[in-house]
Image (cartoon, rainbow, N blue to C red; front, top):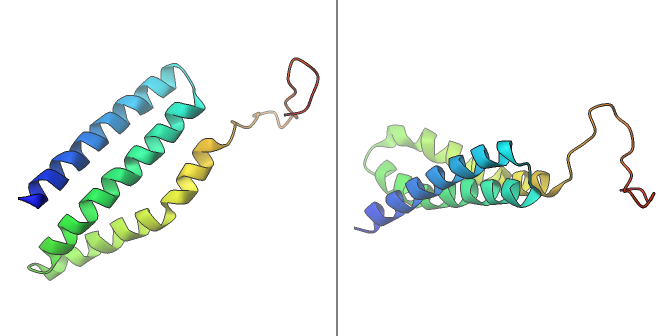
Length: 102
């Protein structure tokens, strides 16, 4: 029963992440980028125990478990990247209207 709830919650997190990502494309925002990264991590963290339980019965699923564990391990880097301000494509230093460097 717990597997069903974990799977449905992970599925909801993926759908919300996709919707937030699409909205972030329309209106760029650091908060939305961070929300997308956190939702992706939540979905991976919820699916990992379900796949581990399934992999005990079917050893071929250990590859999926390893891939999800690797994604969960590199997830904090995604969050750190989402919190950074976007870089200027021309390579110029961005300044605030007050004249201070960013």
